[in-house]
Length: 567
Image (cartoon, rainbow, N blue to C red; front, side):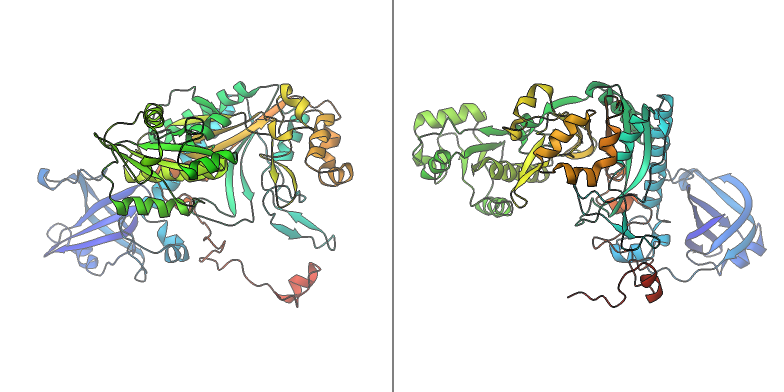
């Protein structure tokens, strides 16, 4: 049984490609063998639903289609039952047809019949089953946490749900099960997991959705190494179950400071080189005023050696300069390394010793192209990080068949928010600091490292977690550093602070973005291709036309003003 994908009439014999969830099977209506079903087959059209009976036969050798799993057989039909007819679909359901996202999402039930989307969801199922099997075998309990909880606005914007029975009050949909999974540890569950829906009302892009799925873990009586080992084992099982790829943990590790210094960001793509090289001290006092001014103001000068790119045209360089401008660069200095000399408008400002120092630091050879960034460290890292990735794309250095995992560790505990004029948690306010850094917590909080860790795959963060604070005194101390006084802390997190006073065990955890992981496993360009019923970039659903208006009665029952209008 299945749907008609294609119908071909070869002047007597009729062939139908019959599709179901498992793939395509060729069925044959031969008038000389079975004239009755052949006569009915003339009326069949695309996406009609059929049931057939027949004899499975080997195709003639020269007619086999080795691209299909069933390409060496066909079914000679003896009985045909038309289960349903279909209107002409708004787009072809062949694998290679190009269709706009809005049309695909409006008719998502048809889009799901396309082999690419169907195979993505089948792979997602295999991944979820591998996760459940692995964690259950490793003594984890799958426990559900509430979907209706209280708002704790410390991260992204919450989705709010008005309460009918508690006038003027609201639930929030969880951005993550963070507080509840910590409470489970305090309740003695020791090893918890959940494949859970989370919600964030934030600006969207290709790899974000307003509702998304996490693989959520929390463990008691553990350190970072224990959690990383569990996570690596789980990822290994998922890759084996979905792609047949054998990973070899343990994965490489790198501190946050090293990642930013070498790659310009905290989620480096390590499939290729083109690393950032610091030239600040080597060029201090050089004749190039632009660099000197930056260095004197406390900025940095860094460079990338684009190996073999010395043949780039002036247009190529202008394009890269404009690209860098999108990320804050005021311009981009460059040097082409030639056999006889270094070619650039800026080479005249450097001494032979400075050129030699740059050559050694960058391992520069004839045919190379050196690209510079000179500004504050944050701007230089942003610009050169994006330039590095752009060069990786242009030069074909991002092999989609290579999976490079990297743990990034030792993140800063806090960062300064200039808009709110206070320190905020880099991950979340329940992350434990390094004990050896505690003496700096109040005096120099920006120097305090956290016991946080992210798992990065090919330049994308697929999972992140931390060891949590399990002392009520330490938790209150950190909240105060974040500008959250005792009264506010009690209002927002009182239930957690009270729980910490009753023998909370040392604990920590990690959460993986299942959607993003599946996007990478399937090689999809959009996260929407691995979710059954996704939203658009405007957080709308073309299929159901959500969000939608509701009746006046519903609003008044929820104690909301039915006459509200946007100013």
